Image (cartoon, rainbow, N blue to C red):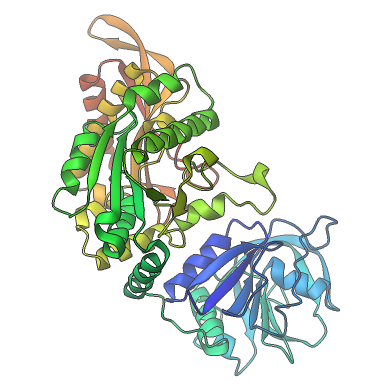
Amino acid sequence: MQHNVLILDFGSQYTQLIARRVRELNIFCEIFPYNHFPTDLSSYKAVILGGSPFSVRADDAPHPDLSQIRGKLPMLAVCYGAQYLAQFSGGKVEASNTREYGRANLSYIKDDEIFFEGVSENSQVWMSHSDSVKVLPTNGVKLASTNDVEFAAYKIEGETTYAIQYHPEVFHSTDGSKMLENFLVKIAEVPQNFTPKAFVSEMVAELKEKLQDDKVVLGLSGGVDSTVAAVLLHQAIGKNLYCIFVNNGLLRKNEFQNVLDQYKGMGLNVKGVDAGDRFLSQLAGVSDPETKRKIIGRVFIEVFDDESHLIEDVKWLAQGTIYPDVIESVSVKGPSATIKSHHNVGGLPDYMKLKIVEPLRMLFKDEVRRVGASLGIDAELLGRHPFPGPGLSIRILGDITPEKVQILQDVDAVFIDGLKSWGLYDKVWQAGAILLPVNSVGVMGDERTYEKVIALRAVESTDGMTADWVHLPYEFLMKISNDIINKVKGVNRVVYDISSKPPATIEWE
């Protein structure tokens, strides 16, 4: 992709949201750790420095090398970035008298500044810092203030460098997207040419050039990502794409056959492999979430290795990896800060000897759906809720047994079918049921029971980076709870998860 915007990540939870806002402007951007970004910046048109949980006054403060950026490319420094420029370029940053978090309003905006074109007086912005710029850097010019922050925005004369101490990317910054547009389009003159149609055209051409006449094997899951990846590859290499759908024994109820039926008529070469017993035997007695993920990833690769040997001269493994997977697996502060591993990101074992191709690795989930729509993929398939790669294994807390899988499959079917029949499915971004590792006392008829507890989860989100619980109608929850307890043997209690992300994650493991 040409005309990139480079976003430097300093560990802020908002960094991916900056990328989302830039992409919404039809501008392609990439996130890199502040200490590991490309040395060749010739294709970049602008750079954004993100926020950080660190203080620029701390001994372990992140120090980016801006020698190839500053004064050479238009740069927007956000929050930590703005304070970094001040602290190490002749200005001064001090601890604020009060921690500045939440809503604030611009009380002063410098006249005739392109950065603030179309931004209303008293515009609301979102602060999130405990330090503040007290002295501007050399050649700094104040552009905006709030009642509590004198230098809410500034620029550096002689450079195309702008800095703001608030977060334009969050919803609460009313004119944040307009400010980003002013900087990227009007100041940095970045072309707005990143559209689904353009992505398809460029990616199909790139795949044709990369793959030539090579054979590619792809793992289908029935989900949006793998399906869109398959159709893109099919357009590029046709019959040389071999799709394999693996039943890992942890799919939803009847999903193996339903997915195979779904792909009939799409022109894809699909083979179903029922390996459920193989996965479940390897998972027997394992309770640790990360260990479960790694076992599933390993066995998944082993199954693919077996199947790929049945295809003569296959050279590539295609994966439906998307951008959040890539970003979450490369932490600014090292592997210890990674929330969870993604078994579909990274290299393959040497024995497999397949190269990886990931057509969607630069797209967010909603962008994948828009690309899928431009490819003519059925709207019902594109609207399907995300489903984790490790399947129900991370919704069964503790060890996994065939009996637990059966219970959760039956519960999940009641929940998902209920959402659809009540017209709620398309109003939810992701939903599922979790089998908890506890039993609770109940009473059925005249008998005391001691059976499983189920937690229901339904969230609304755009790309899974942040999420909030959905306020499902009480009448619906009452009906679903009754249906689950009455229809699924072994369950006597149902609860509803009302946690947001952050601080919780969407999945429980």
